[in-house]
Length: 153
Image (cartoon, rainbow, N blue to C red; front, side):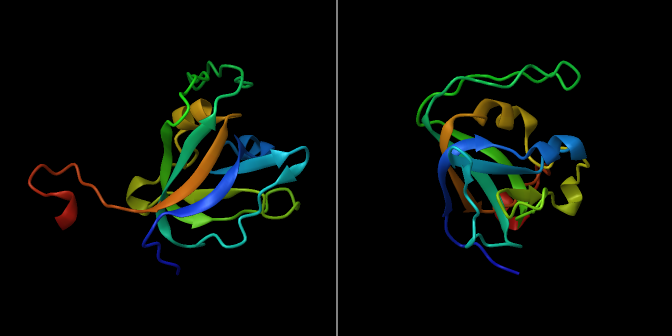
């Protein structure tokens, strides 16, 4: 298993996610469109590392997603320079459509298991279709136990 000890830049591009994620009924992975039909493939990603993934907005673009009333989601507009936390979990690189590894995702930790929202849907709707820098950060634990600090959790 890989260990992440420093931020790891995955690349820059227009944030999207594979259509197969919707077919699977989950928000688990994202991709970076590099222009036209070209997508980042993340060959050096630290697969298996525990990480936090963020998207830093470099250029604000038009929202393309329609609101999802069932999930109570709608796109919101970020500001240039804004860092959007997408989620925490184990880094994986799926090949959902047999088109190569054009997505990167985070599988949730067992104690935070969610069957269909591995990444934050609200954050994804905020970051979708904007030009971003996608980064993995070392995971830092947290606790809701008021008698413990994050360092002792």
